[in-house]
Length: 179
Length: 385
Image (cartoon, rainbow over all chains, first blue to last red; front, top):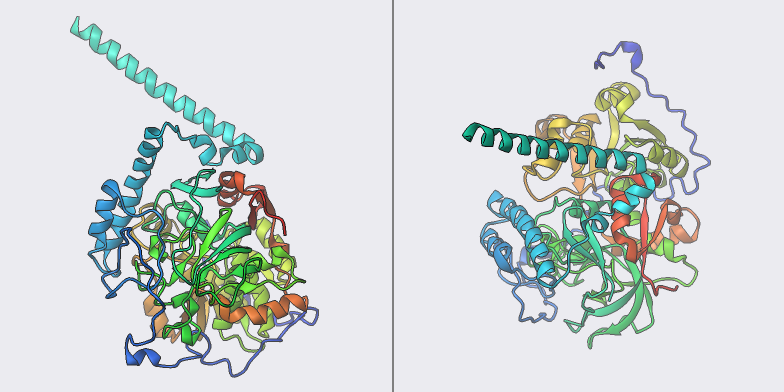
């Protein structure tokens, strides 16, 4: 087992690194780089409040969820995948909580998992059977990690077969007992 | 059009029936994508770690392309321009954009105030489709997109939309002074770039720590730094202390974020049970490895929920923590100059060029670290530069 024991002789700082061959060494060194980004260009404009001249407002008929920590929609926003279905109901509920609340983030993670199931149902309803093998990129696994992949498949088959055998055996046993 | 389509954790597909993007705001542009990367932070989405990642959305925040349509108020771009598009969506007018905090724009993400809009990065970052597609809508076209110089290789250009600025800003925020010892946690593309850029600020010693030997071997040559595999050095914090006369590094950079390995409890809490905003192992090591009064610079991405960090040590050691999403637009002029002068050579980190049609394989290769993958780039079928 590895320990964190040290002896005094372990402590050293070998400052013999040769960086003369590094192109551009020190080219951006700035002894006055303090305070540095992100407060270097501090303007305090925000002290005047939410008063800047806003860009033109994007309009939409889609439902866009909004953080409770701001009064309005931002001037532009994404319009991908508006909330829908059960996951949409969960998302609407989650957005009633602030960004500092588990009440917001954990339900959103749960909604994402529900959304995944809804996605499969949606695919099937459109006559599309998801090719999970391809969607998970397993062709790459076959190409670059074939041995591991085959082992995983073999293990999966073995476990499934064992469970199936057990179920069948238990059913037969119950039948015999009931006779 | 053809676009990447997220179907749930570890499941994506190339969908030929995705709707074409449309102009939705007078300052929008439609860009035909020429190159699009899969970012390490896309894997957080792919692994289902980022809340409000909706099925049916297209990822991709690192892309370049050709402008094919502009909105009525766009003045700085014209159809036919080839542009690199910063991953941040920024209005250029709000109080934060005026401070060049382009990653913190207040007019691009209605869903959350803590982060500005980001292309293809869940509804927590604004609900925009991303650039892993043939076409993409680019809001605030007068602000973010930058015309690619004629001399620039498109593979360099696409890495200037995130990887290079983020790595550079990690070193910049660390306030590196000449001769400083810098420890970078994480040898992904961002960590490698942060290590390389640390030299530009005059670092005296740059140490990179990860657990993937093939990445460390690449980083040793590319970033010309010392590299160590944390599986073979005992406690990384003790290791850093022994290398720094027991004082600690002047600067530590967390370039890993929420999927850090190296601590079982953190992995279970942050990556499996999702009870905190990711595994904070790298940040933990950074805080404990830095010297008293030192600086920890964070560019690793974490989720919005709470996360366990040794905040007591931050107080007791008087550590300054600086962190932000990269302000790409702010840094582009300087970084273009560095690429032109051969100081930075971004495209060398690209290991895989993958047709967009094979996006699912691309994600799996990157996620499972197959075929010594460091940086995959997706190329749409009709992309000719």
